[in-house]
Amino acid sequence: MKVRVAVNGFGTIGKRVADAIARQPDMTLVGVTKTRPSFEAGRAREKGYPLFVAGSADVAEFEKAGLPVAGTLADLLGRVDLVVDAAPDKVGKENRRLYEAAGVKAIFQGGEKADVAEVSFNALGNFAAARGKRFVRVVSCNTTGLARAASVLRPAWGIGRWDATLVRRASDPAESKKGPINGILPTFHLPSHHGPDVRTIFPDLPIATTAVVVPTTLMHVHVNHVRLERAPADVAEVLAAFRRTPRFHLFAPWERVDGTPQVMEYARDRGIGFNDMMENVIWEDGVRLDDRDLYFFQAIHQESIVVPENIDAIRAMLDLAPDAATSIARTDRALGLAPA
Ligand code: NAD
Image (cartoon, rainbow, N blue to C red; front, side, top):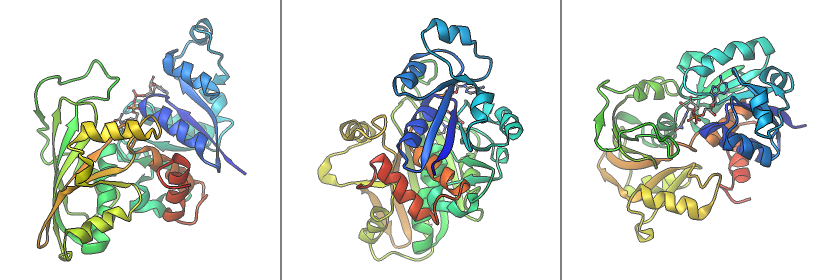
């Protein structure tokens, strides 16, 4: 029997998670919510996703736009086993009381504080910790990228110290009211909040992060220096470890992927999801080893990297897979990230 799932908040993350749920063989997307009519509400209708209203939405506005509404968020919550909250930062916390009242399990996103849920989640990092839980938070895009890399490096060679500088995109492509459009903005909170956020997955990971915001909408890039506890034989051994781990995509020098523009052009060419890049992107040329000192860049597509993680969180919470590897393989096959 398929589990019944709703998505509350149908924006950048919500619409991607909804599509991903609809593709899973063990899940049914019962409905999505909108707070007002928009092209995205129209797309939900075109895709056949029942549309419910949330927040202070005015049903008459939807009717005027020719968008039939199947009910309210409360109606939707009455029909599902679990809701994925993809509302804007901090709204998830307010929504939690609605989920409590309805008695449904809920997944929150990385814009919420860790205490919104019982556990913070990353599929490679701590799948088992979410098993059977009622409230889980999928960590942010940057934290997901760092947690995935930690899941590769730590078991293989141990991590003595990790310094990462996050070069952050200014806004998502559709956000026309955010900047900067010219300038590099240092984040004066030193070290940045991302290190402690990674420790919600790996409590004892010795990582310190700093961040700058730059005028781009495509991706984030992490500049990493990791002092490993044991030296890998060579760079090839490190690359092989990334390559055999799901949700890592390596680009070879011959592919001529100079930076994030070519990565996202590749994603458009490949056509997965919303032309997304859900994997951590590693440039083979961008990995260097000096004894135990590992240097590497990774690029993170902020709009999509958490999408497969939400799917695995659903499986962990509803006990649909025996372990992380099984769930990740099932998710990635359904999304087209792994061969069918
Ligand atoms: P978004 O603004 O693109 O989408 C949020 C959607 O929720 C909008 O459609 C909005 O109309 C709707 N909404 C507003 N109030 C609501 C309410 N009360 N109930 C239900 N829906 C409501 O935001 P987003 O970028 O998708 O972010 C959602 C969450 O995902 C945030 O916690 C964010 O931090 C996190 N996140 C975002 C990114 C990213 O780069 N966009 C990456 C990782 C995690």
